[in-house]
Image (cartoon, rainbow, N blue to C red):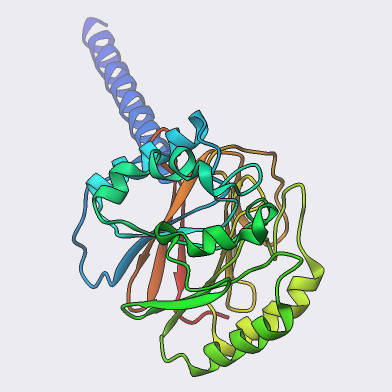
Length: 303
């Protein structure tokens, strides 16, 4: 009886240890899965085959604590993973685009990045055109605008900046856009403007923009469209080959829903990082807690 009792206790102990180990393993696996979308920034400045790393942010120009919090996270990320380009997708100066506020809403918040030679490429938002139709911002050297709409290249990526405001020179701009897209030999084409095409926020999608832009994007292989105006983060799945990214939570946030074509959306202050490779772009959304809250991959050519 004593031997059987000892065997019983020993086997019971083994079962408890096994159960404990199983619980630990499951918990660890769950923790690792969760960290995929809420993970600390890893320092990895040199990656094999990396062509370009850039950042996008929009609706920034408040000079308030939200903007400084996002700017601080951008600066922290830069120290871990250097970049030298920021796409600034409009509403650069609240409330009325007054250029005399430029120090308070741009030069001071981003001074650490500017000192490191990070270049901001801006477009005009609806608040920016309230003073002199935004002309002072177009002329401001720190925004690096070649006009109200313009294009520039970085490595194998060509960027196309648009004026998406209601008073834009739409006739000539669309002629220009199609011509530039048709002439582009860049494998990666990234278009950015202030207003959304697809969005799940308070403004929602723009049917006219869908009708105007998406055929051009599909015809000429535009893989990414970046915008603000909606004060949230949102990444769509590939829609006819184009992924739409909203990074308008650069200083404040508003509620966002989830549409059938939404891959991820969040009412979170933050910015997006794009790491461009020959065959893909890896996207990371980073919050003011300096943690990654969304990861996505954009293929060079997708259905």
